[in-house]
Length: 242
Image (cartoon, rainbow, N blue to C red; front, side, top):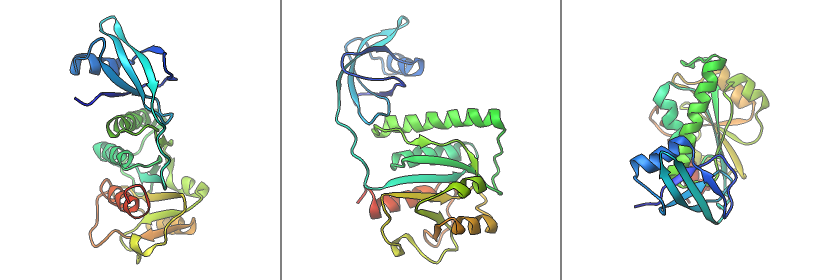
């Protein structure tokens, strides 16, 4: 059986003993049926995995001792950032989960003119906490040792006013494909609209902010499919899938 990986929001170092958080403890003890002496891998997003061993698992708590720090995760050849219009329910969860698996360094949720989802401050905080849980779980599953940054949701226009650096805008009407573009530098931001796409005015603002419009092919892809297809293609052309 694959050694379980568990995220802990705590400093880690060889010899340290700590109590695992509730959800992780319940999963190890009740679902995987692990007990004292079993091996686990811990990570906290600092770029390393930490070999650890359970000291006990049960109603009295689940404690582990850190045995050794692993090698640091190599820096990617291309730091990818995903700016995506907020979509409904599982669509957004799916897009974030798979984007993390594909290696993004950051995710920026955006509210556009045609966004179906509208969140007040309280709901926005709850949704952001949920998305962070999706992000962490994707790191646990995929073996990533650094957590991508999840930025607070912003209106698209406000975000564009502060955007800088190289960027690509997914646009079915663009006259260029990814293969037509020169290799980017060390950072690249991919902008994808919500379910209804970006309005003509928003597309114009993105182009004025320095984004280059690109198409993926002859088909119109859903908002949760388009970024994943683009991220995979970008990683294959210029990133760590080469």
